Image (cartoon, rainbow, N blue to C red; front, side, top):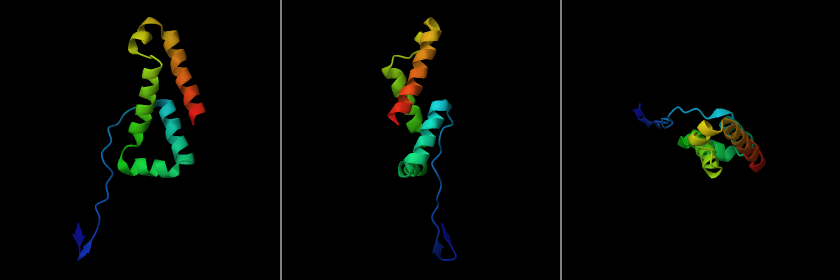
Length: 93
């Protein structure tokens, strides 16, 4: 954009699809913000911040075999495995 002969950059963040990231996703974002500031800033300005947390949790669910089928068949086991993701994620950070 040009205003009075001066070029002004059009700084807008890319649109992010609103998705629920849950408590562990929020904790991951908090961790990045506090301990990995450069990574957090780069992800924020590129519009990929939420996608990283969502992808991390989905990968962990897939690795541990946490599926909707398991949720239907054995809700207690499903809940326990989700809790393990939180514990493991905390250890990995």
